[in-house]
Image (cartoon, rainbow, N blue to C red; front, side):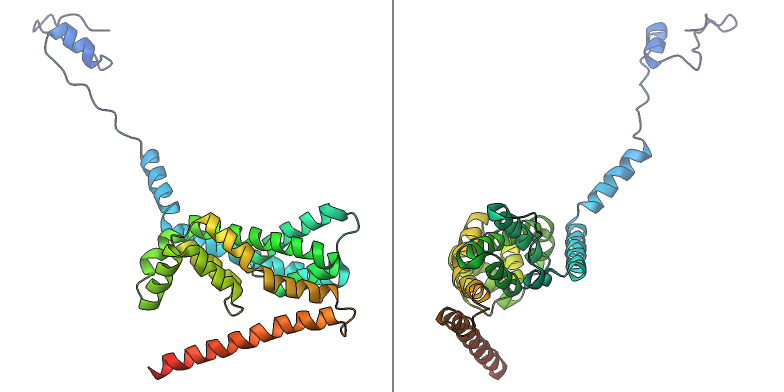
Length: 266
């Protein structure tokens, strides 16, 4: 409400509650409206969101998740599958699928794949064990790749400044399928390291999964067969599987030693 015209001065005065529009209509003089200032809470929320979504915050979250998963695996002791077996309520195809899912989660938590492959053979035999182990391998690699791509790529890519790091990134980004296939076939390349290196590069998810599935067949099959025939260590199948595990490992160790020796001599 506007007050009446001031009887002493004859000018219209507005009460403190009068709006800018009412003053303009009454006096004929344009009065600018007072701008609404943003509340401090909105600004604080925006700053917190920027900090939480920053590359280094996401990388810290990834490290925390992986550390928590590895700690959980130490407490759960998945290697007991070799002695205790699966729960009695699981059987048939459901048991294989459940094992593949557990296998994938365990690989993300840095459980060694040889233990899981041996357990797959001991629990399900050669054929079903190989299917479950390969399924878990691809699942675990995909989970690690997606976590690394979503939480770690933006923070780690600016750190790729060394000559060897740039060369590896260029190889994975330009020739992803071929490079990852070779990494899976070569026994000396750590599984988890190759997952996160591929995630930091610009390699696509589909070539990564295809190369992982195909390249993991020989080594995985050798461990699964060894686990399935562990009760008969003198059988030809067990001895062949043991040779397929030992010989590539020795070759990989020799190649790695020679590469390291050449780098030192340069």
